[in-house]
Length: 196
Picture 1 (cartoon, rainbow, N blue to C red):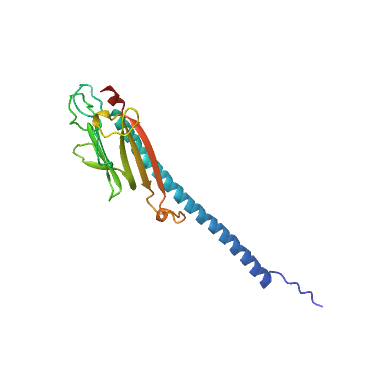
Picture 2: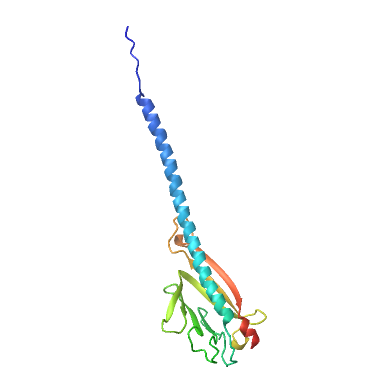
């Protein structure tokens, strides 16, 4: 009698191990795809927040400086503009009594077609892009009581409203054709306008 002992796997065992391996591979792949999409979405949100905050920080500093007038010259620090997508700021930084130097007259303007907020320091460089993917930018002028005003002499603060859109669509986001948006509102008091 021969003692024939078989070693190895049967065909059924091999097929079962391949099936289990495929299920594990599919689960791991799905997890990595999900993590990649989540990472991309978080990067876009972070980019939107950082860019918008940087632009808002610059706007806040320059609005607070508006009306700086050590020579007591006659000019309006923040003149009323009926175009709610444009903001003009004046300050006499060099103390010469005129607001014609670099950064003494700054204009922020929203180009709705290009979806870009431009900053123009009225120097040789002209208007420079400050914030892109900007869906909406609105400027409101407020008096000392916080009420809306259209009278330049009564302007003491500015309310800004931004709506920024992500640069790339997120396939998992059902709104705005997959583009995530961020809306920020800020009221900024121009410290120098209180001393008119």
